[in-house]
Image (cartoon, rainbow, N blue to C red):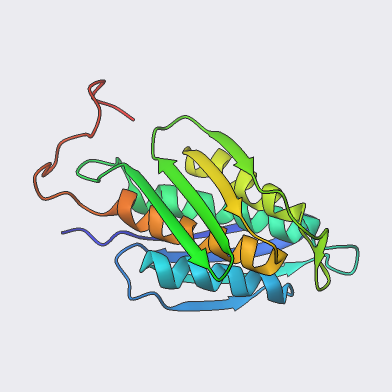
Length: 197
């Protein structure tokens, strides 16, 4: 089996980013982004997605976290798209429900080749520590547009904003793991009646 790994660099005037992924890893994560809460969430993707992820970013966080968060989503999307390749033999669809105390979230993903996102998370706070909850949409929108996936995210209940978003990231990791798993019954077949994704 071919290794499903990729390393992508993205340099702009706002951020310099390097992302490495191994879709068949052990759930290890290494992060140096200047945005600690995002690193905590990225660790959830790695651990619950059972993929190895390294993210290094030098961004203009002296202005705010927006460019760093969005551009990491973009670069992670590019890296996963490159690592998965032509998508032959993968399950393609993934979903997960994840609870954390009072919070419960559902994430559904399709490696369809058609970017689209529906995100319904009624945050109970505008900020989690210093982190602006509006930036989560920017992360996922960047990811979706560059991984070429359809993504539905719903926080079904929750009172604590940290719990709300942590259940989203854990469910996202688990949905990715399901969708990207090789289906032995498919072999080298494209999981689409169109013959292309």
